[in-house]
Image (cartoon, rainbow, N blue to C red; front, side, top):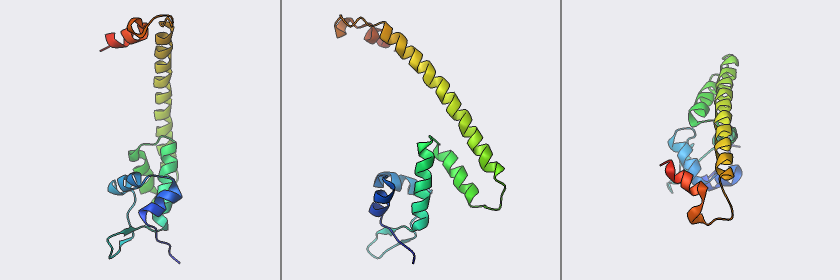
Length: 135
């Protein structure tokens, strides 16, 4: 038997907000299986499965573009898996770049923190003064 879900059902099952689900629908990552006479949209198990897939990809910090590419590839199960491997390898490179960027931010924040003398007032705070100079 085919199961149909309202958007609120999908939200409960996936722990995504209804706004997020609508956003993914607007981006054509999912689609309702039909709209009832009451104008409610109903979704099937495929939409639920896709939302779980998307949520797991987002948890790995994949972009919507990367997720769209992955989903497009899954529509062609006869293709070799190397295509998926390449997409993931590209994402690994993005993650490595982000790690370098975050490491740089951490160093900058540590330097800012070291400029603080916690015995002064906010008016004299060197962290605030340095941040204001960067405008």
